[in-house]
Image 1: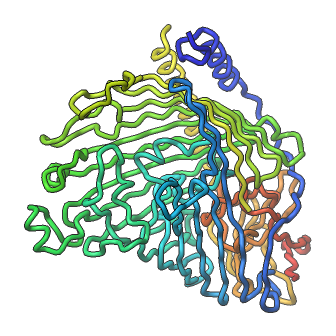
Image 2: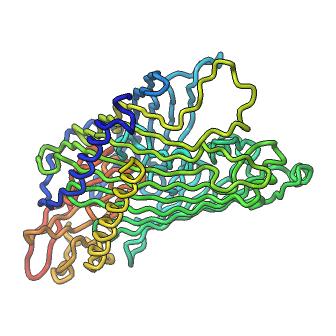
Image 3: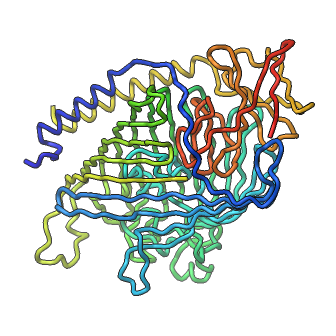
Length: 424
Length: 143
C-alpha cells in the first residue's frame, strides 16, 4: 500500500496526531510586536511629497508577485515544475483623487507563437480609481469583483497551500475579472465595507463541461456587452472575525436578439441569467487563524444552453471549505511566520443537471489539504502540502472513443505540492 | 473508524468549537472600531478627547487636512498609538479588522503595532507621536 495512500495506517496516524494537536492547543498568548522588515520597494517619485500623508501627489509604483510550483501526482507517478505566474503591478497616482492600477500576468512561464506552450499573457486588472472621499471610491476598467476570499486577495502570501483553494478555482473562478464600473466604500457609522459593481456578463457560448464559469469569462478581451451582471458584497469585521456575503446575477447570452432567437435563447441584459451567492468568515486570534466559505451557483436555463451549443452545463454547482491554521512563530518576535494548516473542501460542479444534461461523478469532489507555509518575511512564502482528492465515479457515457491503453480512472488521488511565492 | 467517519467527526468537532468561539466573541459586544470622530488639524496637531477613547480598541479620526484617516489604538497598558490608515504598498485606504488593518486592494495586513503581517506591503504604517494633556490625546502630524 503506498505510504501516502489515505488508507495507509502511517498516514492516518500522522493526520490524527496533527488534528489532535491543533484542536487541543488552547493557550492564548499575549501578542508580541513584530520587528520591522526592510523595505524593497521601488518608487519613482515625480513631485514633492505631501506633508500629511507621506504620499507624493503624482507618482508611479512598480511591484508584483509570483509563484513557482512543483507537483507530484502520486497516482500517475508524474511530476511537474512550473513558473505558475509572474505578475507585474504598475500603479500611477495622477493626483489626490485619481489613480491607476494594473496587473500584467504571465502564466506558465512561456508564451510561444507556434502554440506549443501552455503559457498565457493577460491583464489581470487595469482600472482607474476615483476617490470621492477618503472612504468611498469609484473604479472603472478591468477588475476582480469582490466575490469570495481569493478573488481579491490572490497573492501567494495571502493564502495557505501551494494551490489556491479548489472551491475558489473551480466554483468561484479566481482570478475572475471583468470590465465594468464599481463603487466601493466603508460606512462612517458602522464598520461595514460595501462594494457594488456592474460588469459585462459571462458568455455562455464558451461554457464547457467541467469548467464551471471559467470558460465563460471574457477577462477583458472583446467581452460581450449585450449582457451585463451586477455583483455586490458586504464585509463586517467584529472582534477577531470578518464576515462577508456577496452575490452575482447576470445574463449569459451576448448574442443579438436575432441570433439568440435562432438558438431559442433568451437574450437581453439579464437574459438566461446565472446567479451566485457566497458567504465566508475569517477569524484570527494571536497565532490561530481559521476561515470558512460556502458558495452556490444556480443556472436555471442551463438546459437551453445545452441544446443551443451541444454542451453539458449544470443547473447548479456548489462548494464549501473550512481551514484552520496555527503560526508556531507568532511569539518569537522575529517577524517570521511558520504556519501549519489543514483544509477540507467539498464541491460539486454538477449538483443539479437539466434534463438534457449528463451527470459526471468526477466533478463531485472532496479535497483534504494539510501542509506548512513559512514566511521568513511577510513578502515571501515557502509552501509545502499534501492534497488528497476523492471524486465520484467516472460516467462511461462521457467517454468517447477511449484510447486502447487508457488506464482506469482513479477516484482517489494524492498530490505532493511544493512552492515558493513572493509579493512586493 | 474509517477515513470518512474520522473526517466527519473531526469536522463536526472543529465546527462546534468554531461556533462556540464565534458566539462567545460576538456576545462580548465590542466592535473593532467605533464610528468616526471628525476634527481638524491645528498647529500640526489633532486633539481627541480621552473619554472618546475609553473602552475603544481602535478609534478612527478623520481630519480634512490629512489625505487618509488616522487610527488611534489604545494599547493594553493604557498608552496610545496613532497610525495613518494608508497602505504602504500602493497607498490605498485601510480597513480596520479584528486583529489589525487590512488593505482590500492586494490583501496587505498590518497588526495593531503597525507592522506588516502579510505582504505585498513591506513597510510598516506611518506612525505619529502622541501625548496626553488636559484630558485630551494630542496627535502630532508631521511629514
